[in-house]
Length: 159
Ligand SMILES: [Zn+2]
Image 1 (tube, rainbow, N blue to C red):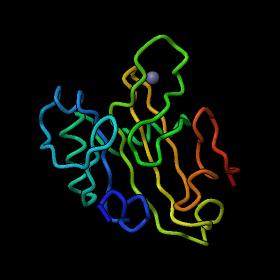
Image 2 (image 1 turned 135 degrees about the vertical axis):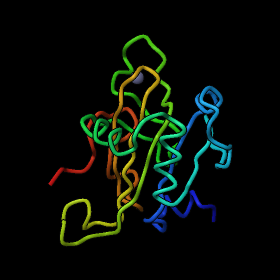
Image 3 (image 1 turned 90 degrees about the vertical axis):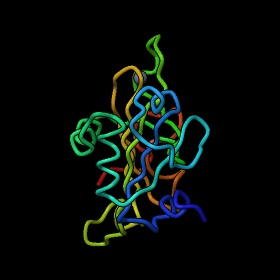
């Protein structure tokens, strides 16, 4: 199992995952190409603190500030973190996800809702058009929770 597979299976709660397109990485040039190749770029899975530093080095943004900004809008993020669907994608522009920041949370019965169902992956994406958006889903229920392809709202009820 690769680090990314382990992360997506909810086995790496202390790590964060960063997706960057090849173009974005080349244009920024500050991050070594250490990640795993996915369809449109690569994904780096690293311990949380390193990940936040790598995110800042790779994007020039603070990971937590970016996450907070992205939280306001829902959009589908690929379950392998290899891309996403911009909520503004009807507009005539390039809407490729440039980078994605993700972390996971352990199952928590006390919190209820989505968190009682299983481990949750949180993913925050930044689009080439400038929009930011977020998705979250339960490990093992990738097609029943979170925003599905072509949709704009989560499939699960917010509780
Ligand atoms: Zn966009």
